[in-house]
Image (cartoon, rainbow, N blue to C red; front, top):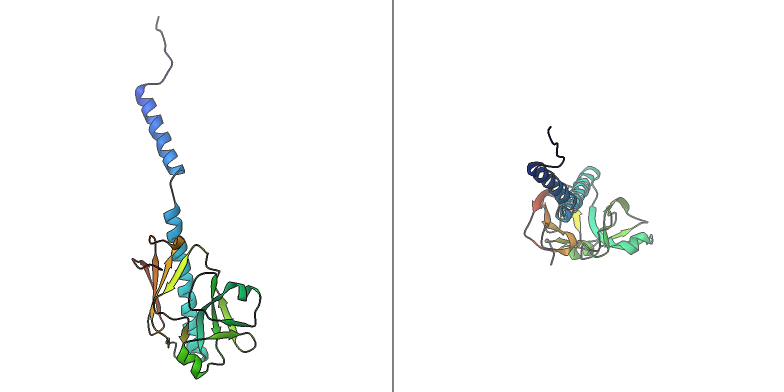
Length: 191
């Protein structure tokens, strides 16, 4: 008579432990880097779409179009005038508008103000998270597109730094012709 024993072989036990280990590592995988990269890429691609739209709008309507950051609280409170700010982050949103009344002083000072009674608001981007940083290396508070679709301000790079860090930073390049190119990963920082 044969005695049948129940249990697992060493091989079956090792395969089971390996499978459980793989599943646990997938479940506990830290995806924060991937999420930061996606947030940076999505923001810059949305900004690229808005810059391209502003350029096309300026060229097709023969009007000056401005892309600039404004204070979120001023926009949220429906202020009639929104002053373009120097920094592109820190409780800001980015707006695109047709500037109907551009003075020579505004052009010289590279300044702009959206006035709801005179100007046409074209687009508004989502608010920039307080933990993220955005820097424009052209050292400008606005991108002003003339009637040919070219920018009359300094070209440069937009750098997006998720969680104000130095990792996972992405860049978007704006040329003098007004075109924008997604550059991807960059060593530039927002500091």
